[in-house]
Every structure is written in structure tokens, then in C-alpha cells.
Image (cartoon, rainbow, N blue to C red):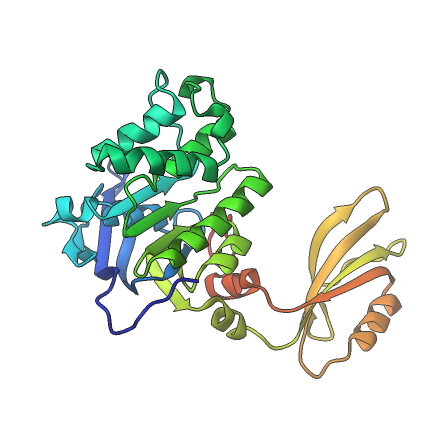
Length: 336
């Protein structure tokens, strides 16, 4: 992880940041951000986690000077995003996952060099940096290939490299590995962490839909929903906040005529994935501290469930997220 000092000026700071959009067809307003206050220290890898529509991308756009806030204040590298956008832009980079922008007639190498020139990077510095980034994203065989001939995955990796051509002090990664294959995403995550450590003060703000990605990369994580910050802490502290009891997943085969019970001696049960080829289903529950797993298994079998397999695990970041937000990361429904 990156090193940071709490005494230094913040890399990113927002105070009561609010953004309201007019709803379509005159149906009132949509509040995308509702008083978001965050402080990100230099050298941090900081995560924003939230369900679809939580306000993450709106926040990123404001911090990148692409969208004005309705009210509140946002500063990046000490500069106000509204009054000093030029100074902000000189110090930041942005990678958006799934983005397919680019100039199709240019080659990968030409496109990355062109973006370095937008930031005023001297050519003597830009070309070696471009070539190094091409190697990072494993596009050396495609370096002289036109962008319009790249596969979707290759174009995504090129766009990832594009975010680093200016060697930004503060890098915004908005779903950077969206749609990437598992191995490419793993390599690029590891490289980002090395990049942050290589020079003091480099800072990353990450939004992602992948819990494991946030858990692996982030020093701290803010959990947001409906435009508000619900929690902000280290991944370990967020997990600890909901610990207590053991997470159990069973593969069970209900007996003929047996019905799934909503709870077992006060412990709520939740159905997971079915296994049609075996005629079984996954049953999940959280066994409170002090309760014995063997007793719960015997009680289930007495109610007609044949337990085929048992797995236990510790509290995950996803468990903490669901407890704090009230629903899963990809759930657009109402919180419960």
C-alpha cells in the first residue's frame, strides 16, 4: 500500500458536496450527491464502494472538473475544482473501465504519445514512458496496430495505460478492470500498487464493483449509498464492524415434501445457488457466537434436510457492505 502522512495537506477533500439533477419529463429532482465529505491523504489508495446509482461516478466527474457541484466544496491537490480547474487537470489522470474512446486511425503507440502531448510531456520523456506502459499492459505485439483493429480487451488495456502517460500525482480509477479477463486485471492491480509505492505522494481513488479488488488494493474505503457516506474505514475495520459468529454455507438436499424454513431456532436462513445436477441447493446462515455448528446441522436434518457438504468462512468485505447498506453491490432496489 502507499505510504501517507496524516499531517500533510489532503490529496482530495470534499466538504458537504451536493449534486442535484433535474429529473426527466419534469418529474422533480434527482439527488446524486447529498452532502459528501471525504478526505484522502497523499499516498493513499482510497476506495469508493456503493450500489448502482450510489453517486460514485458523479463524485469522480466533479473531482475531475467534468461536472460542477450544485453546492459544497471539492479540492484536488489543494486546488478548487470549480475555480482552478486548469491546475487540477495538470495533476490528475483518469481511467474509466469500458471506455472505447480513441482515434481509430492511430496506432497504440501514436495514441498514447498524443495523449502525453495533451499534458505537455516533453517528447524525450514521453516516448520511453509510452513504451514502458505498452509493456505494462502487455500490448507490445500491438504497439504499431491501429486502434480500430484492436479487440475490446486490448483497447481497454490501452485506455488503462493512457491514464498514466502524464505521470499524474492523483489518479482516478473508475471501474478500471471492468470487462477485463481475470489475469489481465490481476496484473494491472499489482502494477497500480507498485506505481503508488514507487514515489511518495502518489494517490489513487478507486471505484469498483469487485469487492476482492477493493479489499486487495485499498488503504481505506468509503461506502456510499444514495449520495451519502455511510461508513469510511480500513477494509479490516469494516469487516470487524460486523463480526460476531461464523458464516456457514451448506449444500443440502431437502427431503420429499420438506419446505425451507425462514429461520432455524432464531437464526435466519438464506437460499443460495441451486445445483440441479445433484438435486441440491446452497443454504447460507450466520451462526451466532456461542452456538455450536453440530447442533444446527442436527436440527436441520431433523427438519428434513440432508446435509451433503459444509463450508465455513470468516466475515468478508461483502458481508460488511450488505450489513451497512442493506443490499448487495449490484442491487438497484430499495434497501431493506
